[in-house]
Length: 144
Image 1 (tube, one colour):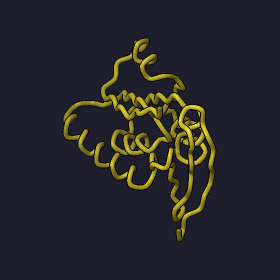
Image 2: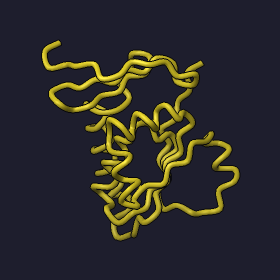
Image 3: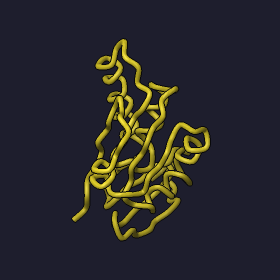
Image 4: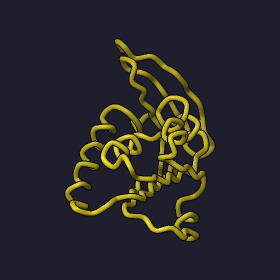
């Protein structure tokens, strides 16, 4: 494909086959052949975060929890909408977090103090959670 360049192909014990590629300089991540981050996924999250502004009109959104962090496309769009918020991202697969840090913007958000990443099972995290959140995003699926 014109403009498409493979950046990484690997297997994860948790997620299976992961591919990262660039199309005209923009990263994309596929898992099992399905687009998970970048591209049209960014547009979906943009639309979703725009909808949350209607739901939370007049309310402060300071603490956001993302169950199923992935490579961070949702983080980027949520940060644009709620720039003062602190985001906690839960991801079970450390390979996906490393990809998000290297090819997407997860590292930048961590370094700026806008994002805390926990590599753990989302259900276990929720069972033990002591914090409260203004907004919870659930974007979990598991490959069987």
